[in-house]
Length: 466
Image (tube, rainbow, N blue to C red):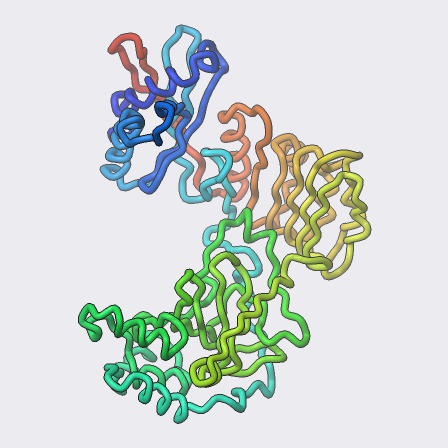
């Protein structure tokens, strides 16, 4: 067995966990959970309070760091990125450690360290991530687009810059599989933005930023900002929608094969030339792809010439993808479901506060409803989900999933499913429920290896996978 399945690897951490939760782990049934990854961890260990008047120091938490590092070393040896675990006490007083491997069909959860979204179809992504741009007949470059003027202006501003050769530009086009717009070619003929060209001169780099209006990506780092460049967990992505208003300058997409990313605003937002504009836009307009959003881009300038020569860089971000009638969020149980039951509805999120559970009957047969995210206890009858024939993502509590499974009524149209865990639920029960769902699609199951040991002695035992 790998050392990740060796009780001794975990023993330093288990001692800290037991000392942090003596009452919770005092008897059978009590348990605590955690997760450790190569880039971070969430473990149920209480950190000591620093002495009054000083901040926490590394040495204050050295025991935790050392214990976690032992597990991380085992992960590296096993070629894994992360591991989830549960600790509980057996009837005989021995400590049981459950080492959980979620497998390739489960996205890591943000609340439960065991079960995130279950991806029921390999490689499936939510509908907005499958959406391609619509053709806009008659779309043309803006009148301000002038590659010759752009190149002359940049040469005046950057007389000593090293530009790209035609061969380098051709190589970039071959790598990207797209012909670069003439404005972008003109820009890189003047400056190719390689760090070695500046020979460590930060002032030279700043002159390029000032001349162009952004931090320019080197020619060999240009990329197509399509949907794959903007990954998002199912539990968030499934409640987004890609919407383009009839007069929008920029199409409301996750990404596009026509978005050629060439710069950064210094804060993580990417600038791109847009070759697939919206009905009210121009081919080759400059858009800003916000790093805090998962869908859409904001119009920055009508052309690259306009941005560089005229200094136009006013960002107009839009958020039309998370509003009615396409997306509805009802956060009070008394909210009327029938009021949002419109043909355009794609996403329905039901929060739970007070009032009577809701009936889904008004939603039956809606042609575009693909996501239902319902807090535990908000549905009057989970079997009414059968009337939602186009669902691809369903998020329910364990009890609601149990009703569907027992009735053989889990929608076969689903691409992904999520078990919403609130309150006290033993992880073993949630894992078993998740595996029932995964097995319906013949997906890899979540495995669990139980290791037992006595932390008061040196006696340990290895358990089997479950």
